[in-house]
Image 1 (cartoon, rainbow, N blue to C red):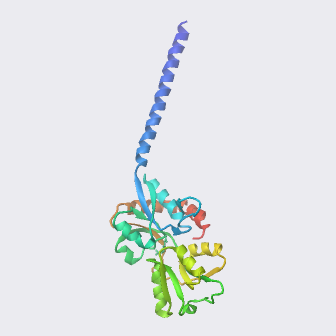
Image 2: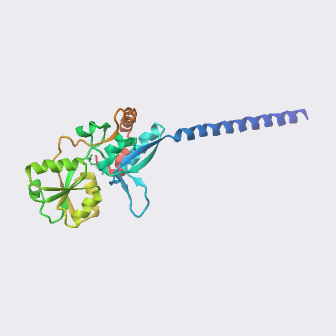
Image 3: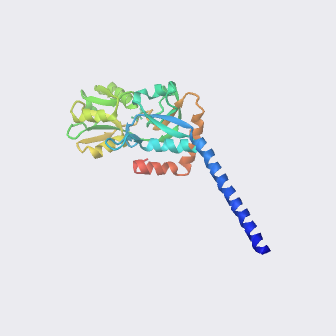
Length: 263
Ligand code: ARG
């Protein structure tokens, strides 16, 4: 009689302790939720597969290497990321006017841009390509003489076209978005376009009438970096996490996922 009463008491006590544990677990989760409310706005120009793009006809989601990288880095610092699509030529201004917290858009850290914004270390390197239609007869820079060359407005490809123009006279046309360059070429209005290699290769795979060749590297074509408003404390924080991702292989995994391992 006595024993079973003791057993009864112990059981009640145990159930009580277990219930208390359950409650405290829930509390931890709630604190985490609060932290997740911190949001950073990323500016990008979603015309740059596989860096950032929207799959037309599927959903409106902006995805790509840069989006994954932003989410990984920001996530480690306790932030969520909201992505805003802006024409490439408007991204620096968007940072300056604090419309966005950072820019991840395959952007090259040039000296001119550094006057207005700060950059992280470089996270990816690529080359430039001259893209043209098969049979155009354009096989080297000299063949561009008198031809119309398309570039994205405000890009280093635009600067590159101007440099080429110093030695081979060309007509330079700019457009806001990369797909417009491809359309103009297909329609025969542009003879060629200068596009970053990894992006160009994607188009060449899809559009079989296109071909191209690599261009020599200019002094400022070192690769892509993340841009921040001047003196933002995020620059150093992101840089630290980026370095960790480079060292622990996380960045390589993203490179394999989006670029098929091409470094
Ligand atoms: N790397 C080039 C630049 O910084 C082009 C980047 C274009 N990016 C884009 N998302 N369209 O000027």
